[in-house]
Image (cartoon, rainbow, N blue to C red; front, side, top):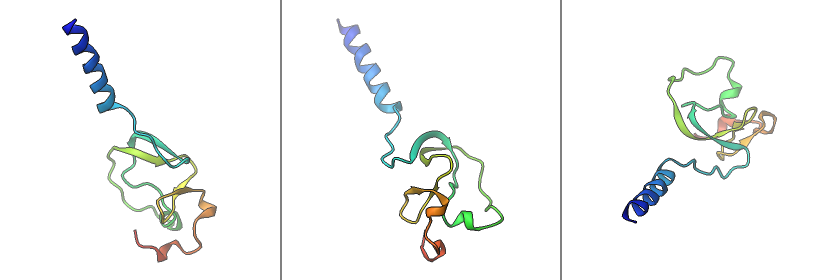
Length: 89
Protein backbone atom coordinates (compact mmCIF):
# COMPACT_ATOMS: atom_id res chain seq x y z
CA UNK A 1 0.00 0.00 0.00
CA UNK A 2 2.74 2.45 0.95
CA UNK A 3 4.57 1.70 -2.34
CA UNK A 4 1.43 2.51 -4.34
CA UNK A 5 0.99 5.87 -2.61
CA UNK A 6 4.65 6.77 -3.15
CA UNK A 7 4.46 5.70 -6.81
CA UNK A 8 1.32 7.75 -7.48
CA UNK A 9 2.78 10.82 -5.77
CA UNK A 10 6.03 10.45 -7.71
CA UNK A 11 4.20 10.28 -11.04
CA UNK A 12 2.06 13.30 -10.11
CA UNK A 13 5.09 15.36 -9.08
CA UNK A 14 6.93 14.39 -12.27
CA UNK A 15 3.95 15.44 -14.40
CA UNK A 16 3.71 18.79 -12.61
CA UNK A 17 7.44 19.47 -12.82
CA UNK A 18 7.91 18.48 -16.45
CA UNK A 19 4.49 19.09 -17.99
CA UNK A 20 4.19 21.50 -20.87
CA UNK A 21 2.80 24.89 -19.95
CA UNK A 22 -0.23 26.17 -21.77
CA UNK A 23 0.36 29.04 -24.20
CA UNK A 24 -2.56 31.46 -23.91
CA UNK A 25 -2.12 33.20 -27.28
CA UNK A 26 -3.83 31.13 -29.99
CA UNK A 27 -0.88 31.75 -32.33
CA UNK A 28 1.75 30.54 -29.84
CA UNK A 29 3.03 27.03 -29.24
CA UNK A 30 5.25 25.62 -26.52
CA UNK A 31 8.79 24.77 -27.64
CA UNK A 32 11.36 23.08 -25.42
CA UNK A 33 14.21 24.49 -27.54
CA UNK A 34 13.23 27.80 -29.12
CA UNK A 35 15.30 30.79 -30.18
CA UNK A 36 16.67 33.25 -27.64
CA UNK A 37 15.86 35.96 -30.20
CA UNK A 38 12.35 35.41 -31.62
CA UNK A 39 11.31 37.41 -34.66
CA UNK A 40 9.37 40.57 -33.91
CA UNK A 41 7.69 43.28 -35.96
CA UNK A 42 10.83 45.34 -35.37
CA UNK A 43 13.40 42.70 -36.35
CA UNK A 44 11.70 41.78 -39.63
CA UNK A 45 12.22 45.37 -40.80
CA UNK A 46 16.01 44.88 -40.82
CA UNK A 47 17.69 43.44 -43.90
CA UNK A 48 20.55 41.92 -41.88
CA UNK A 49 19.57 39.68 -38.96
CA UNK A 50 20.80 40.72 -35.52
CA UNK A 51 23.44 38.44 -33.95
CA UNK A 52 21.79 35.94 -31.61
CA UNK A 53 23.35 33.33 -29.32
CA UNK A 54 22.60 29.77 -30.40
CA UNK A 55 21.05 28.54 -27.16
CA UNK A 56 17.82 26.70 -26.40
CA UNK A 57 15.12 28.59 -24.58
CA UNK A 58 11.95 26.81 -23.49
CA UNK A 59 8.66 28.66 -23.53
CA UNK A 60 5.84 29.88 -25.74
CA UNK A 61 6.80 30.98 -29.24
CA UNK A 62 4.91 32.24 -32.27
CA UNK A 63 3.70 29.65 -34.75
CA UNK A 64 5.62 29.48 -38.02
CA UNK A 65 4.88 32.54 -40.16
CA UNK A 66 3.96 34.76 -37.19
CA UNK A 67 6.03 37.40 -35.36
CA UNK A 68 5.70 39.18 -32.00
CA UNK A 69 4.07 42.59 -32.10
CA UNK A 70 4.81 45.38 -29.56
CA UNK A 71 2.07 43.97 -27.27
CA UNK A 72 3.75 40.51 -27.19
CA UNK A 73 1.02 39.00 -29.38
CA UNK A 74 1.80 36.80 -32.38
CA UNK A 75 0.62 38.39 -35.62
CA UNK A 76 1.24 37.91 -39.31
CA UNK A 77 4.02 40.22 -40.54
CA UNK A 78 1.55 42.18 -42.67
CA UNK A 79 -0.46 42.92 -39.50
CA UNK A 80 2.48 44.60 -37.75
CA UNK A 81 2.04 48.28 -36.89
CA UNK A 82 3.26 50.56 -39.69
CA UNK A 83 6.05 52.00 -37.59
CA UNK A 84 7.07 49.32 -35.09
CA UNK A 85 10.32 51.11 -34.28
CA UNK A 86 8.44 53.71 -32.23
CA UNK A 87 7.71 51.07 -29.57
CA UNK A 88 10.20 50.30 -26.83
CA UNK A 89 11.06 46.63 -26.31
